[in-house]
Image 1 (tube, one colour):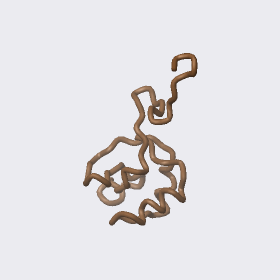
Image 2: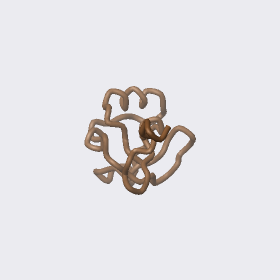
Image 3: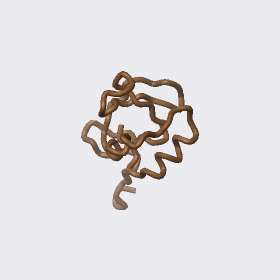
Image 4: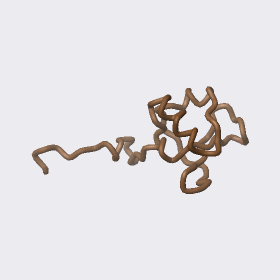
Length: 84
């Protein structure tokens, strides 16, 4: 999964859940991470780059974009007009 590239969006989504945004998360923006745990339908754990909180930081699922194994964002892919 890829974490959103938009820091302001990230911060606003954290306002909707129990977990808090910390400035160290800024270094994770736009990068690909494995999901370590599904906490609930709105929250997943990603590896914390500092090892804090037992190596897990919790993020809203709304901040994640699914990728396929090649790393191409399948949520934003559109079929070429010649194939539609």
